[in-house]
Length: 146
Image (cartoon, rainbow, N blue to C red; front, side):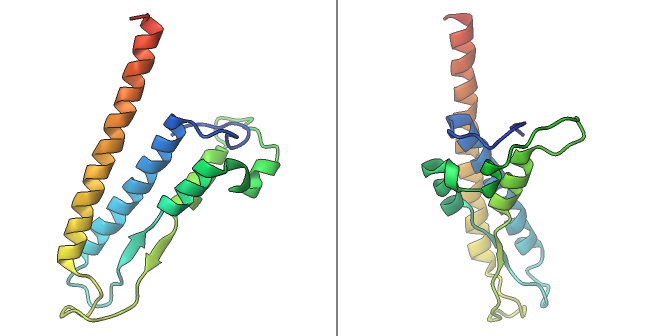
């Protein structure tokens, strides 16, 4: 995870965007996996992670995303949490529990829908991971001068 030791970046670069996307997709994968694992649990309620709209807000206007931008924070000890850990956690903590009970198991989980979403999320994660690899390959090429 990136360490923004003072303030959240005023300019969101490609690497920051990819990091936030991977974090959000990872959280969505965990929620979907939990939904699938609890498909036969009648008291379980479906979890859903939505982060794309928040990510768009950060990309479009990073200065207005968080009040933490206005506070001068510094990391004075390696044990301190960095500001990015708080903001990334807030970004992907939008986990909704949909309350409706219309499946045989007594919960609101449609296993086919969850499996489809898990596959889509996996493909998106792989795509962003590949973009991140290409980004570092380009940086390596630039540094080597080739």
